[in-house]
Length: 135
Image 1 (cartoon, rainbow, N blue to C red):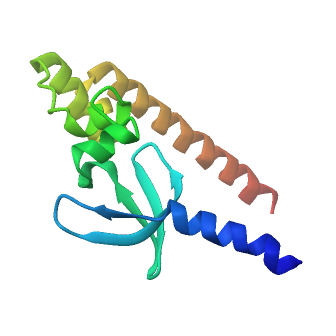
Image 2: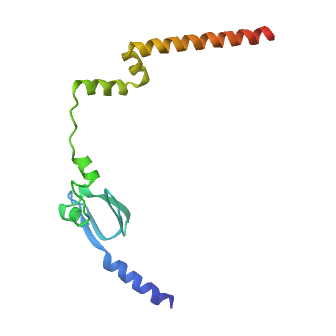
């Protein structure tokens, strides 16, 4: 009885198996599509499970799975770097240098940080002096 239930499932999975060929020539024979993801398809073959990205597949396959420039991931991959104006570029570079770079770029922030560190060191010194005096 169990064999009769398994037989249709096996024949159905064999019927869904198909061949895929990437634009670089790699072939996936008798592949079964496990799932479709935003950036590619996951295939099961006799050799194992593989993920094939849509950008590696021919346009016909991409269209079949509704992948194209309108898809956010496709648009992101095909986009060119955006040129920033000088002000935006300077802001980006400040952020790239981290908090130290941002602080050094703004003299007022640097002065406030210097005062904060100085006050903190003084407070720690006073607390340590009180602890030492009580011992």
